[in-house]
Length: 268
Image (cartoon, rainbow, N blue to C red):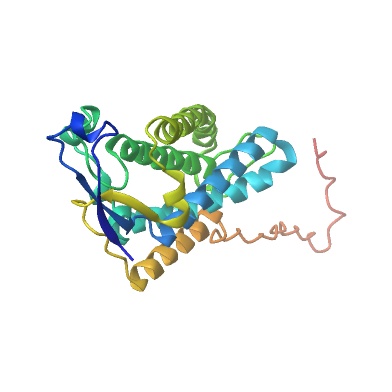
């Protein structure tokens, strides 16, 4: 059950802060189940993609499978960001420049992703989208050919493969910053970020709006879009070209009553 209570605004003794007003808090289901499943599934899929990509060779088949899983997860997240529950929606957490400034000044009192965290989420979604897009049409000419590589020119495929290899460094940077930010919040600011992504529950300011749960229709639509995206990315829809039987050249008939046919020219 959701609860609302007050906490002191500072750890200092009460007699040293006579004018300090208590900060009202409420406990809400901040992150819904689909979002939490998405979060941990994406972590597993990205980890698998990185590990198999570094291993190369025979592991590239699993690298491709991990990429398809990421395609489905990102597609689901984009739909869920439009029609999902309150704090999963982009319009709830995408910050304006003014909101970022308020956060940097230490005056932000919202719930869900803080402004810098929201920018991190958007950056990760963007880079991962670029990674899977370039990987799907990629071709390293050694151990991997993307399922959609046949749909683009070979020169473009090779160029996008190079971009794929370069973008992974940006991905490493974003993941590193993400981990550092979590450590700072948990160890220094004493703000538990990991537990709510497991249980869904967190204490937030009482002024924060209570979340509105998305209905089953939104979930079904998001799941259907994800499955359609995986099918499209897999290349299974590409019909193989039918083999054409070579047409034999008609043989010249020897003239009636004449001599044997003239000797044929050498094949070379």
